[in-house]
Amino acid sequence: MPDATQTTPEPTSAAVQPYDAIIVGAGFGGLYMLHRLRALGLRVRVFEAGSGVGGTWYWNRYPGARCDVESLEYSYSFSEDLQQQWDWKERYASQPEILSYANHVADRFELRRDIAFDTRVLGADFDPLRNEWVLRTDRGDVARAPHCIMAVGCLSLPRMPEFPGRDSFKGKLYHTGLWPQEGVDFSGLRVGVIGTGSSGIQAIPQIARQAAHLHVFQRTPNYSLPAVNHPLDRQAVARVKAEYAALRERARKAPAGVAGFAILTRSALEDPPAVRQQVYQDGWVRGTTGFTRLYKDLLTDPAANDTAAEFVRGKIRSIVKDPAVAARLTPTDHFIGTKRICLDTDYFETYNRANVTLVDVRSAPIEAITASGIRTAEREFELDAIVMATGFDAMTGALLAIDIRNGAGATLAQKWAGGPRTYLGLMTAGFPNLFVIAGPGSPSVLTNMISSIEQHVDWITRCIEQLRARGIARMEAEQTAEDQWVEHVNEVADLTLLPRANSWYVGANVPGKPRVFMPYLGGLHVYRARCEEVAARDYEGFALSS
Ligand code: NAP
Image (cartoon, rainbow, N blue to C red):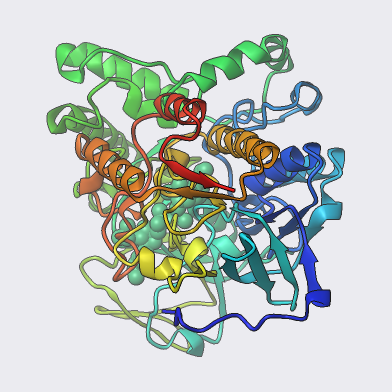
């Protein structure tokens, strides 16, 4: 943990670049934030660790990487010209397509000139005398601005388990979240994939098609549904575009920020089994993460949940030919939807291939990575390449990787040692003028991220505009408001089954991380109304001072 008494060496003032706002990250959050603040006439600087824009879609280039929200909805709504002129090719866009969209947005709105690429922010110090944030980067930049906006992403700090001997491996080691730009050719290779979350489940079928042999090292089986991805029909796209504004409006009023998810009022237990089976079958062939919204109580009632879980388990048994392999792939340790549900293309079918072996590392854990492969408690596997699909230090990891100090002797890492604490997910008490986009305490990862990003950016933009107009130099979340919000976030989560799963939502994937349900489950529509109300009441719960 950083030493809070240590102060940043004050650079010579000539070296300090002054701005009106600094944004960390040039993913979808940072890009839109830059666009909006620049339109206010502000001098803005964005620091981005990657060499290009796109955030998660810049880094996650593994084979099969694809969004699980439909492209016509997983896209910015702020520009009518943009949404009319950009043509999505597939129902669920692939990583290359989303990355070219991010690049198009950066070019179209001339965003690059304000972005410093290949520049990682190391520290951010609040200067209480000037009410400014001073940021330091790994390239020696020092920049100051009254407002700092963290757009660092929720799943952007890759997690590599500390297997003994990891560095001794003579083959190639990859992480799905740090994939080489030039791609990887697995032809003729013996490959091992560790991890069967969304990333692993997307990558495994693709790697299996190339590799000589693929071993999948699975600790926990996951629920996955076929994505039913397909090229978009031009006429269907034209119909959406003709009424895009209405679709976006429905998304704004929807709990997950997705217009296509119906809000259902029936309990799963109200329907007779045959009707329920048909509802699930219809959901299965439609291919949607909205599967757990087919009934109102799938995420709150264990008995209701089990009807959906059992349907998916039945599908796994019917697809996977070897009953022993099917049994190992069948999730039984968590409720469906309490870990992020996965969408796949041919995932379970891949285990019918002769060149794919499922290795259960729950019963025989990985003991070490050796020079020639992976050793489990049972045996050694000789491999030419290992792919870690082992996830991220989610929601807080990327924020806490920056040494954030509040100028009053506290670091963010100290404040969040017991888990993240925010007011509305937008600010944290004791750290004035520091905004977070789609961070812990906001709906964020439980929604269409672009809907959540737009909502946050719009709110922050209006807020900064008003602060500047009124000469308010300092805005800070009040402790009581924050405590009440954190309590509310927990209460809402506890009404559901989600906190019970060992998911990254609760930090369970990172050893030693405090177990706290991090995103806000109350729904983006409810949350949006709350944020609007707070702003309308002169930023109730925030202390404003000149
Ligand atoms: P993840 O869901 O956290 O999955 C990590 C996997 O690695 C799990 O199967 C985990 O097993 C395994 N693992 C971790 N440490 C291990 C160890 N020491 N030994 C054996 N196995 C280990 O990570 P992810 O797949 O990268 O997905 C993270 C999130 O990113 C997703 O939930 C989703 O929100 C987002 N994402 C979205 C898409 C999409 O839009 N389609 C695609 C990729 C990612 P345990 O479960 O036993 O811990």
